[in-house]
Amino acid sequence: MTERAVLAVSFGTSHRDTLEKNIAAIEAELAAAFPERTVRRAFTSGMILRKLAGEGTHIDNVPQALERLLAEGCTDVVVQPTHVMNGEEYDKLAEQAAPWEERFARFVVGRPLLTGAEDDAALASAVADSLPPIREDEAVVLMGHGTEHFANAAYAALEDVFHDMGRKEVFVGTVEGYPPLEQVMRRMADRKYRSRALLAPLMVVAGDHAKNDMAGEEEDSWESQLRAAGYETRCVLRGLGEVPAVRAMFVEHAGRAMDELV
Ligand code: CO
Image (tube, rainbow, N blue to C red; front, side, top):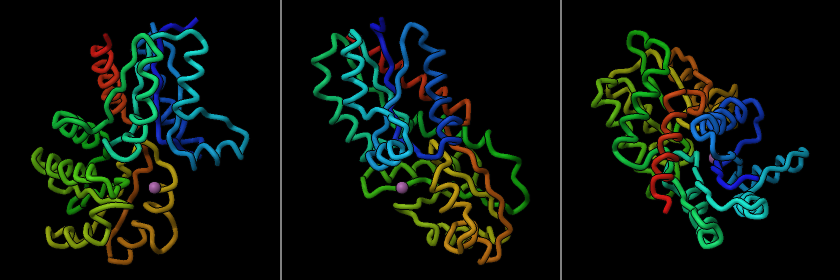
């Protein structure tokens, strides 16, 4: 009998290695922090869920996971997203979760990783501390996902926070939003970083974007483009979920959401 639950909601990934190292690691941390609650998994990406189903793995979407908890007699649910931003996927989650509020005695949806200014500071420190020692004249290029949603502004705010903490070598770019790599490379040259670059994903998992768009062999990957421009490069292929201080941020967000349960 599971009366109380945390539903950990992720965008999802079809790369099993990074799913285990990041999403499962965040879920395990939530389970350890809240032993009185059962922790369940849901993904918001229909594309990923269909891909996994085709490979024989069923993972619940948000309504399916909530329906299952309700059927099991659960009365108290904290929905904690592992999304980075208050963007499209989070809006979708909030919309899907809303009708369930009345069906559970206690129900709350926690906030994504980057919600308040204190989150920017915590994430910048966590990421800075997790990187290998930076070499002379080496720029750090972080690959965010990026979005058309106004939440995309979070990337610029985060880069500012890195610079304010003295990490002026950090550049934040995006695969699908602003700024694209082209713009980041212009800024790198402007700020006299012309010889070395360390690349790392600014995403919860190191999946397709990190492995292919960032570190892939193809000539349009970020690493290939930087090399073609004369940079000596290296890549850190690790999702944010592998950084303990980032996992702690998700636990903290879930705890704050729990405080709002009435
Ligand atoms: Co994408």
